[in-house]
Length: 323
Image 1 (cartoon, rainbow, N blue to C red):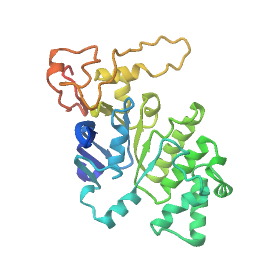
Image 2 (image 1 turned 60 degrees about the vertical axis):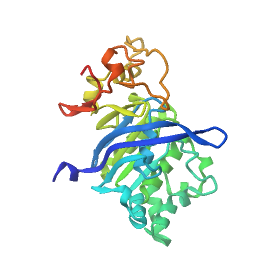
Image 3 (image 1 turned 90 degrees about the horizontal axis):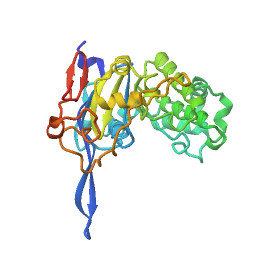
Image 4 (image 1 turned 90 degrees about the vertical axis):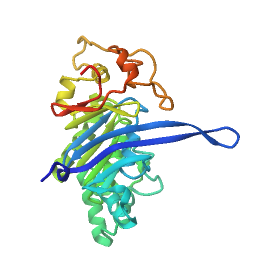
């Protein structure tokens, strides 16, 4: 089997530009480069984590992978097929195989529907089950995520945040997907509940052979679930490596900054926190050269003039002139 065949998902040079409208006639006066040339792959059964500050383009990348946003350019291959070339029937099948768990477990659930109906809806839409079989499948999914069959008669407002997220996971699993995009699925939850949801996702992956694209803005969360981690900054991927090696031996200055922000487990333990100067530049007017150079403590002249190539070395990728 080739590496191309072993990859469930391949993303090549993906870009998403949003026009900025202005003036009396609403003409285009600029462009927001939300995602600007991102490439990665995810093997079957693997978890790829995407991490970065708010506004770096990681959630936009996830939306494009699921065909919820149309890319400006680039290529998305699912099981070797170009998603952009799917006809209506094939696109519907793809939406069954690629699901999402949203960040806000309350806003993503219809408050007018019972939990049982919420989980049953995608199975009805895709013609997977009906009648008594549908009821049994809903009850099985509720048990699978740590809830009981009686919870199916309740409504989202009757649940805690962690329970609502379990419902969201059950809904994603309802159509037997191969890929699940987890868009910051624990960021809206209490810290005590976050580990429970992460452990649940790991257990489900092992049991069902799922593949995850896991999006988060903190390495303290993403390091516990990811086989590999990609670090994004201002629409670009700056580093991609195995989870353990990225945490223990980060190559990019921005990655080192994120790692320094991970809370220490021992109270009073010395922290070598790296504090960046200045604000994140606007994606509507990104700096020349390396996009991180305006805040990088290791910046030299070449960083301000030439954009570094996202190159492979020793099985990992990094975009930095000084590596």
